[in-house]
Structures are given as C-alpha cells and as structure tokens.
Image (cartoon, rainbow, N blue to C red; front, side):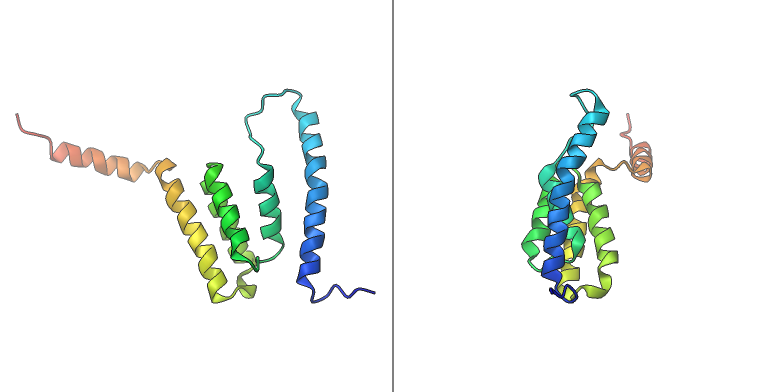
Length: 139
C-alpha cells in the first residue's frame, strides 16, 4: 500500500490530475450556461493550469512561479495575479524558505508595479490640479 503522507510529489500529481479532470467539465458547464458565443470574460487555460499547480504547494522549481507571473502579465491580469500570489504567500508562509518568500514578494511587487498605471488615484489627481493652480503661468 502506498503511503501518501510525506510524499508531496504524489499529492501534487493527484492535484494536477484532479485539476485537469475538472477543467474540461468546467468549460462544458460554462458553455452551457452562457448560451451565446460572445462572452465578456476571456478564458486562459494555461493560466488556469499554472494556478492549479501553484495552489497545491509551493513549487520546488521557481520556473513554475515565473511562468504564472508572466501568464498574469501577458493576460493583462496583473491585479488578479498580485492578489493570487499574496494569498499563496499567506497560505504557505510557514512552509516557505527565505528564498521562496523572496520569489513570492518579487512576483507580487512586479505585478503591482505593472498594475499601478491602471489604478486611478484621486489624491494624485487632486495634487496635480493644485500644482497646476499654484504654478500657472502669469500673463
């Protein structure tokens, strides 16, 4: 009998198999519910796969983390990616080494920096108006 305790690779493989089994069935349900071919939400199967892999446990190979980070960036979902990595950092906190924590924080920082340009900051707009008011050219 296989002993599943202490074998993270086996758990990871089981999670991947379960994830790959659920992804096609989820797609069938979503297509059935939508009723039309045009949908406002785009589907990213590669991103879903990498999210499933990175949700099971902290990846031993940092390339999996970087691929997911790049996937979020390429899909223009930097805000969602930063939230995902922040949640995984909190979830895996006790199991992460210092190097792994640094990788998660780097991914969060990069995605937040990319997302910053699309976030409206009311204080910044107010400051800009005040600056223009006080520094208007004299006629």
